[in-house]
Length: 160
Length: 192
Image 1 (spheres, rainbow over the protein chains, first blue to last red):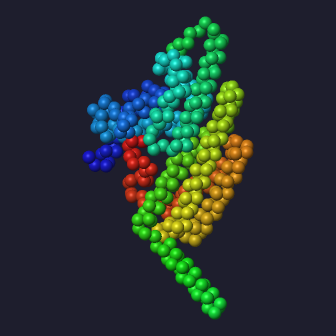
Image 2: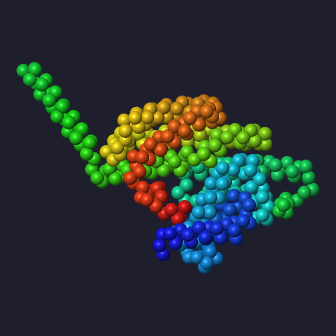
Image 3: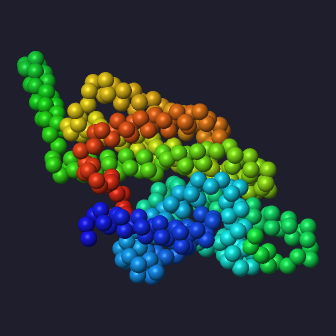
């Protein structure tokens, strides 16, 4: 396979990934976590069965990597206010108990390992700091909402 | 006798200086390749890691500060300000280190590989000096008054660093093969 065919295939696969899968994930935080989870931690390579069957393992890997970097850059340029909204949305779609989610994210910091490789360490530090702040603000807002509605359960509200 | 000793001493110092000058003017191919690779990586780290506007604008955005001050409790506000200050100080330190590395590379090696005009050399020297001074001032300002104290100076530093990068890019242009992107900091781009 020559270089131009390969590049064309990667563009097609990236477009396919955006249309079929990522279009259902409006928040960059969700996209970054999802795309990070398609990467093998031992090899650093990305895998996606559907995409690989339509193209090839290498092309799928490159397409996933491109979209992962894209989601990361979008997340990096998100304001803290927007990050709070993204955290809120992400908690809702994961259907986890908010307190458990916040406790896990605070202790495990899964977003740290979900960033693409070869990214600048200072930018990663900045992103992680923003997510930490957003989580703290989300927690305060959530507690405030619970105090206003003492009978409300701790379960998240349905996805809007 | 004393005059003879002095003359011999001066002669020895001159020969020694000449030896070091000749050695410095002809770097080994291996050493030169290493320096070029390091300079390319420093340039990439500045251009793609530290200077992109999405990072600098967000890092020094007052909108985030205003939001956090209005929506977060005091302990979170304090955490935010401490984090931002540390990251801003880290940013300016990294920019300064990268600029110093580029300056050293330019002084030692770039002239041997790129034919820059006298005016370009002068412009580069002025930009290097202004940038290093601005970075030092920014470090002091961030340390004393926090990351939001000098937005104009941040823009000036980022713009000057951008100019230094584009001029340094000319010195390293011969490393770029047509159709292939800049050298990667990491081994495998597709693993990014």
